[in-house]
Image (cartoon, rainbow, N blue to C red; front, top):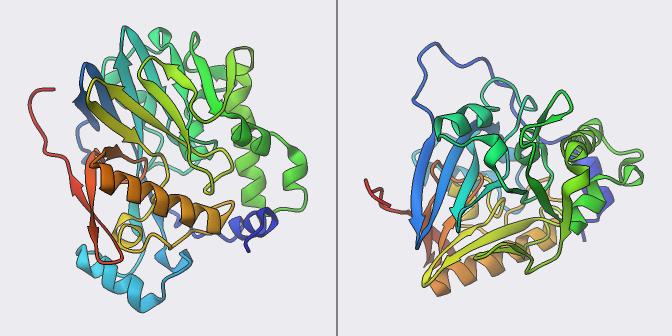
Length: 311
């Protein structure tokens, strides 16, 4: 069984591929809104990182290559989106995650710019819910020690906060794991006086419920958005490399803190989503990430939601 110590040592060898600067030609801001009953959920594209599929566990190279080819991708580093979200409901504005900040170079860290492009005033944000405290989710929360959201409550699962803020967990760990912990601590520090350490089922706001989905990190959580009969599950990091992990939910990553638990959680959540026909959005699904799952052999197929002019 993979232990936390195994994770901390493996994370130091995680394959994040260094990237060069973006070219002069750029796309328009990554902003897309979707209605969920009377609520509005806006997907924000922070940027991307590249993940080397050779670092995945649970599928051999031939299987990985075949699954990537099925999505018209080469057997090499995969561009993986970093998505964050804005939920507007009942007169309240809630942010879900905040992108990578400066953690992963020039192809990520666009959160503040796309938030402005979406017309969201950081001072008007009521709460920030973090799916977990990895840097590609929390590093956009503060700059130079100052909170981006000066009036917002921060909501994070208690288990994640306890794990990442306990230096004893990282004694003797790899440099990357220690850096991750330091960035998590720096991100939450400006919000210390308005921090809510939540448990499963916590109501972030009316119609917004935190769902504990542990394994990737101890407190990794999703957010269920409900309004009448309409629902959307923002599921955080249930998948990282969709072309492989949708088809093979048992495949894990070295930076899953508990790899067996992460695989079990993914299997459980995907089964629920497919059985109930839930719409989902995911931090590392191709932008804007909204879609549904159907069963496909021993795994699942992802079906993007239809884009529309209206909410």
